[in-house]
Image 1 (tube, protein in one colour):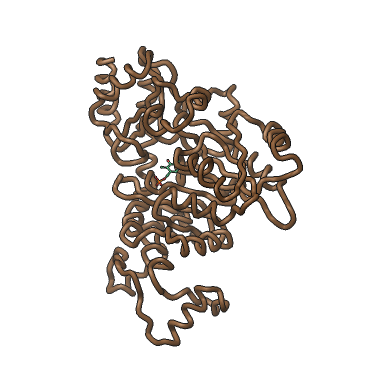
Image 2: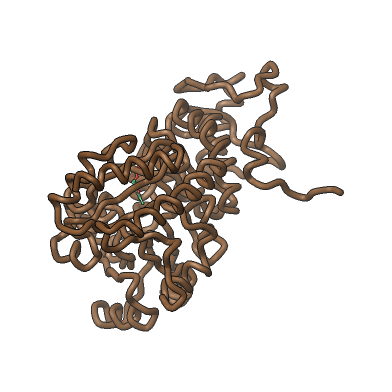
Length: 416
Ligand SMILES: *Cc1c(COP(=O)(O)O)cnc(C)c1O
């Protein structure tokens, strides 16, 4: 039987790399170099003409290497492999998730434009939207997972009558209580927002479930964004970000990246390739352990509410969204402990095995206190509305034995 295409996990060790071109090295060598020498002045001229779009590539011609802010073999190979997971035509890696998000927004937003965004978003993104974009004349409109398509259209009409957004940005599942935003609904909105020949684009921050358990491009998104610091790298040893989408959209973002200088460096790109080889097995195992930990936490008498995608009730509208766009429940759990900040702190201070640290999606389990750490910058009113209470604790489940993690949690509860 001839198989037409392999699954992404089958391609992470080989795709785009030919060992015979590199003395048989099974792994792609690290190209720790800032610049690349040309064989002739004519060749250098030809590479530059292509890089600056001054001529079309010849049939089958790949852009030649020039300078590591523009291109680098490690960066490009990591991008070719990442795109396979989301079914995108191309991908771009950045120095951080925030570099990916800000470069993408600067590529598509212009003074006077309206950005429609779903709340909550990551703290850094929230700050960028509220405090940086307005300095460039970009107007914004926020909605939440509670609002329907009609509600959002009504909000838009009330704030900007007769105008349409040129960019939609959502993060789903949302941090830290796993609210889901319907990507298909956002795609319907973006398709209806046409002004002149300008198309409204929809971007989804897929950091929490992707690229294994959620594929936004397949349900109508134009762009997927990642903090690759989290699951994609997965070892808490580097900072990176990424965008995935069509060739055309990514080409625009890469052009902006060249001039902002926000690309990923060769060594981190090399480490990302190492991580992509184990991405699926890590995410699957972490998700299996998270189910066991979440079950234990849910049954603990000192726990009030558990926010975990595996516990959505059939009657909950969020369950319908989950069934449409998620292929797994992930490994993020948050829960409230009876009491307040003092009880949450006693739990965290007595929790062994977990690291008391922000970030998520790594091999080691992490625990943090959203109200005073990741979400301290969110207004008290928004924290209340989003369920970020003083007694809320967030866990990211890693690769330790789930029985050991549960034992550590049980012991920590004994101190509360
Ligand atoms: C961490 C994170 C970011 C920011 O990424 P950095 O790599 O820290 O710059 C953006 N979005 C989400 C959902 C995140 O968790």
